[in-house]
Structures are given as structure tokens and as C-alpha cells.
Image 1 (cartoon, helix red, strand yellow):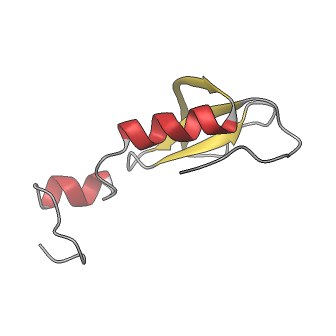
Image 2 (image 1 turned 30 degrees about the horizontal axis):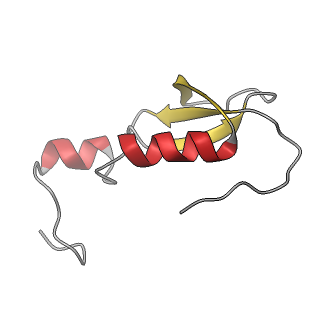
Length: 77
């Protein structure tokens, strides 16, 4: 479980890249190249909770498309 911590940013956005990998990014900063903002903004905890709900398959999109189906625990298919 993630918890809030003190830092310099009040608001974050859920962001994702071309491989559909998710992260959070402070809304006060420009997004790095290759990342797009999703439709979620809020506290650090709020954004991390949204990622936990959305990102259920940690594999990059290119791997999911080449080998459909969940990967067994331990990383073996």
C-alpha cells in the first residue's frame, strides 16, 4: 500500500507511455517525451491507487500482444 509523503508537489497526474506502462508525474512539470497524461489527477496516493486499479498486467504492451494471456508467478508462462 502506498502512503502520502511530504514533497514539493501538491498535484500529480497519472501518465502512460507507448508500452502502456503507468506512472505518476507532478502536474507542475512538463511531461517527459514519450509520456501522455491519462484522465486522472489528484494527490500522490490518489494517482497511485488509480494505477493499481488500471494496470493489472505489468507486461509492456508489445509483450502482451506477442504472448497473450497472463504470466504465471515467477515470470514463467
